Image 1 (spheres, rainbow, N blue to C red):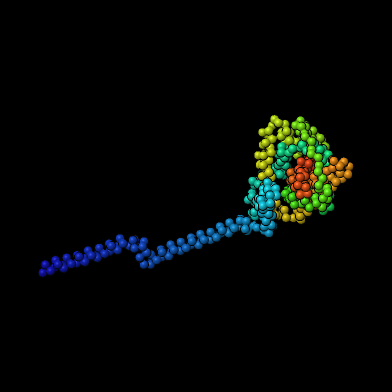
Image 2 (cartoon, rainbow, N blue to C red):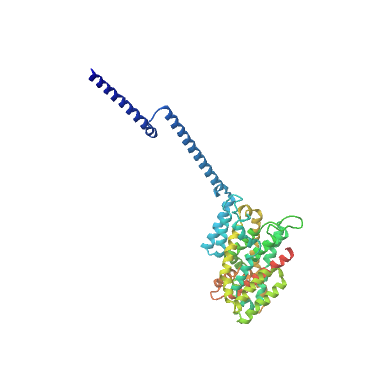
Length: 454
C-alpha cells in the first residue's frame, strides 16, 4: 500500500515538473517568437499594425518630399524658364561660332562673342546672381570693363603695338581715303535721328559706320549706357550690346560685304591700275610719327585721348627699339586676354529680353547701310582724287574700300580683289595706309561726337 502511494506520488511530481518546464519554455520562447513574427496574439497584432502604419506614413512623406524637390529643381532649371527669345539668341550664338570656325570669319572675335551669347541666354531665375545685369554676379564684374570703357583703350594699345604706319608715312595723302570713309559714321547718325533715337543714342549708333568694334563699344559706354539722364528727364537706352554686336558682325563680314561694292563702283580698267611702290621709311620717321600724331590728333579731338593716346603709345613701344618686351606683351598676351573678356561679356550682354527689340533690329539695319556707305565713300573719293593726279601717281580705287577701320581685314580684301583682276598687282601695302588712317579717323569722329553729346 505504501509502495503504491510512493509510485503515485512520483508520477504526480513528474507531471508537475513537465508542466513547469513547458511553461518556462513558453515564457523564454515568447520574445523570440514575437521578434520573428510567429506570435499571433492580439497584442502582437496591434504592435505590428502600429509599426507598419508608421513605416507607411514615413514612406509616403519621403516620396512627397522627393517629388517636391524634383519640382523645385525643375523650376530653377533652364527648361522651366526658357522662352522663344532665348532659343533665337542661342541659335544666333551657335551661328557666330560656326561662322568663326567653319569660314574663318574673325574667329578671334566671333567665337568669344558667340560663346558669350550662349552664356547670356541660358534661362535662369532672377535673383540668383547669375546674369550679366545682376549686381554681384561674376559676369557683371567682368562687364564693368565694357560699361566703363576700360577694354577698348587696351585693345587700341595692342593694335598700336602691332601696326606698321610706314605706308601712311610714305604716302600721307592716302589718309584722305580713311577720312572719306567716315561718311558712314555721319550718315548713320542722321539715319538714327530720323528713326527716333535721341542725340546721344544716335551718336553711339553712328560709330558703327566706322566698322571699328572697340571704338563703338567705347562711345556707346559713354552715350548709350542706360544710365545717363537727358535734360528732359528721360534716361538713355542701354544699347551697348546691340551696337557692339552690329559693329563686330560687320567687321567679320568684310570679305562678304565689300567685294560686290568694289566691283559695282569700279571698272575693270581702274582695278588694273598699278601704283608706284611706296618709298622706304627710316626708323627715325617711324619713331617721330606716333609722337607727332598723338599731339596733332588729340589737340583736334581731346575726347579721343583714351583711344588715340593708347594707339600711338603702343606704336611708340614697337618703334622705339628699347621697349620690345612691353610691345610684345601689348600685342600678344595683353590684347588676347582683353579680347577674350571683351568678346565674352559683349556676347553675354545680349540677353533676349534686352536684345530682341525693335531698337536692335533698327541698329542692325543702320549698321548694314553705314558699312556700305563707308566702303562706297572710300572708293568714290579715290576715283575723285584720280581726277587731279598724274597718270603715274593715280590710285587704284580699290584701296579706298580699306578706309573703313577693320584692320587688317579690309586691306586684305582689297589685296585679294586686286589679284583677281591682275595676279601681279599687289595692293596690300598701299591699302594699309587708308586702313590705319581709318582707325585714326573713326577715333577722331568718336571724340568729336563725344565732345558735343557727352
